[in-house]
Length: 464
Image (cartoon, rainbow, N blue to C red; front, side, top):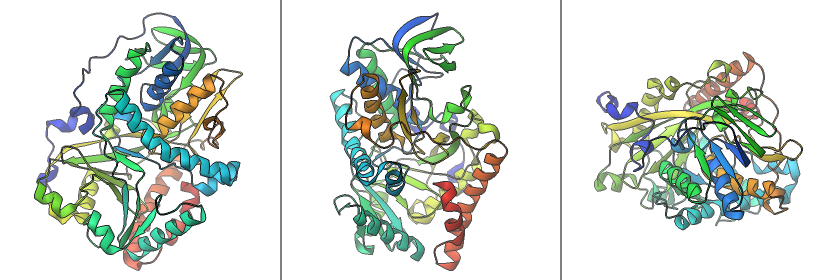
C-alpha cells in the first residue's frame, strides 16, 4: 500500500479532471471597471453557468455577466466524483412535510428527468463529457447494510417508485454488476450517468460565451446586495443578482451561517487493464457505493481508471476554506484501504491523483433555489454533494423565476425554501465533527455487532 500512495507530480494539481481536460486554462479577463447588466451571476461553476446558459437561450437580449473568483470549474464543479444522478439531499418525507406528497413526487420526477437533460444539453452543445448512463449500484456488504437496502426499496414502493426507478438485487445479480468482497446484495437505479465533470463545466463556459454571456475570471465578489455585485476592480449593477457560490458561500458578508463547507476527498488510480476490469465489473460504467454510514462513491472513467471518494475529512473552525484543506493524507490512505478491501485485485495499484474540495451543506440538509422579487436577489445551492444534476435543475428554475414564468419547475417544493442558519461557532465545529466521527464509529459498530448501529440512529436526525 505504501508505494501505491507515493506522491507524484500530478498530486499537486487540482484534480484528475483538471489534469485530463483539453482546455486553455488561461484566465478570462477580469472585470475592469463598473458595468451594467440585467443579470449578474456570482460563481462560474455548474449553478452559475447552467443559469446563464438557459437564460441566454430563452432571451438572447439579456445582458448577463458571470463573475468567478478563480477560473470556471475551479471549485466542486471540476473536482467532484463525476456522478450525474437523480439524488436529492432531502428525502421524500422531508419534501412532503414542506409541500405535500404530490409536490415531493414531482421533485423526484424532475430530478430523474434532469439526468437526461444534462445529457441532451451537452450533446446539443457538442460537449463530449465522457457521459455513460449506466445507473448506480449500491452494495450491501453486511447484514445491517442489507436491512437498510431492503428498507429503502420497501419505502420506495410506498412512494409509488417501481422497479424502473429502484430495485433490489440479490447476491448473484449484484455481483454480476460489481464483483466486490462480502456482497450480500444491492440496490440499483438507472438514474445516474458517470461523467468527466471538468469537460462538462469547461464546455459549458464556452457555450455561454457563444450565446453572448460575459464571463470574468479572477474576479472575486466581495459583497452581494440588491442590485449590486461588488468586486475590488469594479461593480456590476444588475436587476437580478444570483448567488451561485455553494461551498464558498461563507466567504460572503452576511452568509457565514448560510451553508457550511465540508470537504470530500477523492483518489484516482492509474488506468487499469481489461483483465483487472473483468475482475471488478462496471461494464456499463455504472457508478457505485455501498450502504455504509460514512459515504463513499466511485466510478469507472472513460480511460479505465477507478475514481473513488468519500467523506471523513474534518470541518474547519469558522467555515474556513483553504487550498491546504484539499489534501488529507490520512483520509487518502483510508480511501485506498477501503478500495482495496472492496477489490483486493487493486492491492498495489498506483494512485496517480488525489484531491479534495468543499461542498455546501445547509442546516436542514435541503437544497434550495429562489428569487426574492423585492430585492432581486436569487440563489441556489446546498446540494450536499449531489450537485452535478441538481445544478442543472436549478439553472432551469432560475431561468423561469427571473423571466417571471409560472411553470412546473417554479412550483417544486425546494423553490423558495429557506434553511435555518447554522449554529454559531464553536458549536457547529463541535457538532459537525462529532457527527462525522459518529458515522465512522457507527460503521465500526456494525462490523462488530452485525446489527444496525445505535449510534447512527441517535445521530441521524442531526445529519439529515
